[in-house]
Length: 116
Image 1 (cartoon, helix red, strand yellow):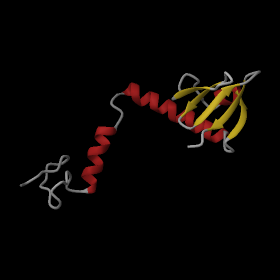
Image 2 (image 1 turned 180 degrees about the horizontal axis):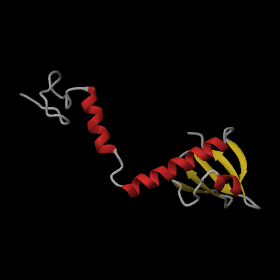
Image 3 (image 1 turned 180 degrees about the vertical axis):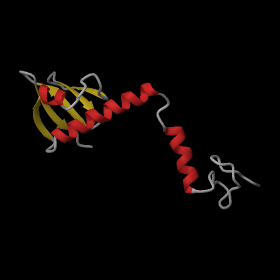
């Protein structure tokens, strides 16, 4: 039974369940199917990544405080986050993956990191 590579179409030699002729073809194929499908998705993912990097930079200890002004000056966009956590005490945390923030008084924010 002759099988051909899903990426380049070359003949595959080796195990019967192989789908690609080389690691390069496997990587190229997976990069194509996993890339952001359009500009809208790409732009949102870029904003999420930027917000995440800013929180990581400002929250090196796992728990810290900062101001809205500092977040905004670094380019933080409060409209983009991955999930919301409502605590039993009524506090609302906004998370970007494992990095989160909560609004305090006077434009201050508590930055936290979830233990994974």
